[in-house]
Image 1 (cartoon, helix red, strand yellow):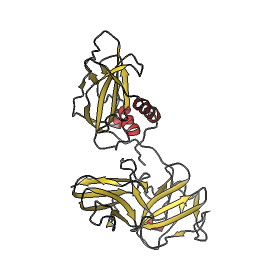
Image 2 (cartoon, one colour; image 1 turned 90 degrees about the vertical axis):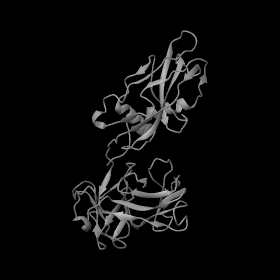
Image 3 (cartoon, rainbow, N blue to C red; image 1 turned 45 degrees about the horizontal axis):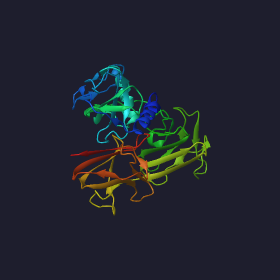
Length: 348
């Protein structure tokens, strides 16, 4: 499956962000450098097929401190609107351009360091910080901000998963669409699967064959190697399926999802029913919203609810409310078919 993630530069980039934000620059008198390329408002599309090519050549004018000195220039970026409260260094050089920023490098910064969504444009702010030498406590000159639209690409990795073959899909252990995932690689698997047959039975297999499989001999929530078929507990529908191979336990809960919150017509008192689309494997709803907050919850109760703690369109159980800034008609998607649950809000 896909996850927006970089394994190669993530730790280094995050450490860079921490060191940059810990110290406020001491502004000096003089003419600050100004970014000349790319231009404010430019767009950059990153692609995995051209990952080794340059994202752009970043260039700027010379800083003038009022006396002759060797000047070190640092190109920084941050999310638009963050006022460089958490900048990440793109590169540093004693020259007026940075010509080694590949698409892969910029993509890693935006995905791992800034957690921006892939396959869509986000506004990213760039600035150049000029220092005499490299010491953090020396006076600096800071350029004006340039805002660029950048579209990162998705980095593909493989999550551990279990196949869930059953009568609902032809007892096919090789079906890659009927699987549950362990995002932490901890042998604790979860996923949401649609069962069109209310009398369906299923099992778990590790791998696309029956060589390693688990069932439940007594239908008591415990797993046994090569155990009996597991029946659905309450008819057809979308189920949250859990399997823990450490404790050898499993669970299945039927879920019907809704939208709730102060931005919805029912406020926090009643859910707005979402519809499951079998083709896209997403929950959908189109409705009028007002400024306020929303969350997703299952079965008109708070036992299973999803929010967004980091405002990055990735969901957490019991997560924070999601803000709706403007009134209007919206289409909202909830995607539970991926290891890290996501949502999308589109104003119509």
